[in-house]
Length: 250
Ligand code: PGA
Image (cartoon, rainbow, N blue to C red):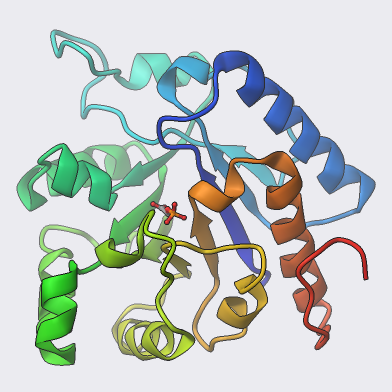
């Protein structure tokens, strides 16, 4: 399977810079004939109709489990339908831990968008104190984040994102990633991404870990040149390049 590369803009980029970014990436994919699946998750205010290659998907970082209604500050599926958006991130740690989404709410959202056939990138991962408590505790914590989640859903991509590695500049080690991904893949046969301080240099090492099908990147993906380098690296690796690369110049 070709490696998946996804960019989560979080609360970054304006409407104008989002359009420029997407057009830039789209052009890069066609110029270089790259057919890896690439995802970009802009802010809700920057959603629009974009002309994109079939392997470039624009998704939404969040939406409420409704078509429309009275949910101040939220958007519903009519706002996604307007732009043909059919891909959503669910369970991201910032929504769980900063915005207080409970597992019950995450599952409600999951089931709502599953019933509508959305592609779901479902995020999960443990906080530092759980990691420090050991592997059994970490796995126990992760399995609880699958409560109410249909793991057989055909349009599901999983993303393991340890909370302590997100936005901290400290990625999990390839050993840690390997251990968790192996345990998850044993039980769930779905594409499994890693996320948490992934950077251009270091990406190849992570993509080489068995059971890593791609990455979900925040901070290091917000500059289009860097995101292109990541796409380039993923593409090279699919061609079995063994050379360590962290730039587009070989
Ligand atoms: P980060 O974010 O790359 O900035 O750590 C990853 C994510 O939250 O998806």
